[in-house]
Image 1 (tube, helix red, strand yellow):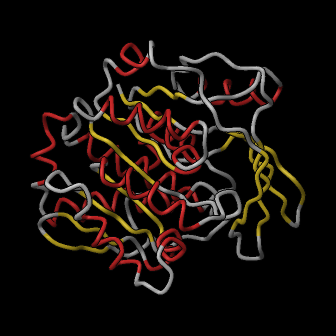
Image 2 (spheres, rainbow, N blue to C red):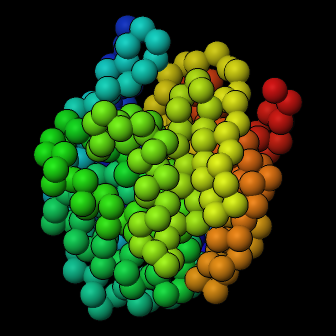
Length: 312
């Protein structure tokens, strides 16, 4: 069982042709992406007992994602995305991030989990961030940990406060993905790849096995113990970039699971990944992101769609 913990919300997308509303939130998108790649996955998040919350629940369940937590009495969070003429999105948010008290239920919720992923708002916005950290710490002795900071400066504006919060999750993670924009915001004036190299050493002696930087049209770059690799981005006609990074993250984690490298007992094997295998992981994830940007909204591909899109 794979577990994703974090925020789910409704994306309201404003574009020249009109306004659309659909389920979103970085962790929720990753859960959907993993399910579409044929992995059993559960989503631990919060949403209200309202029409938006019911839309989120329907979206998750229709993809085969398990939803163990019930809705609460707080309105479901909303993100408003403005698309520019190139389809790139900028966001504003109306959200409440908290979770119910999970201390008595975490052992049951995470008992069968071999990989836990989190990131974005859920890991830096209190009061929920402390609960997410606790879940990661509880899961790590048994599970592989995935992390994507997916920074939202319009919500968490204090860079100096956010940076150590992000770094504590990096130090606990096995598979880390960040965009070059994330790293440029966290570490102004520093080459994003240099920041990623430093992240690779956080948490030593059990530092992350893989740190990946997505760079839009320049393609992803990654580092593992064996060295650094990069692959070109697939060439597609861009509809918009909503959810592209989340599709990449889901496919990256899927590649780890496909290779049977999930679970704390395989942490050593994951850290011995060679450059050729890392290149194949990045290529697979880049293809997933390319399918997503080729169509509107956060709409990650199925495994069959990735097979159909193998030729460049």
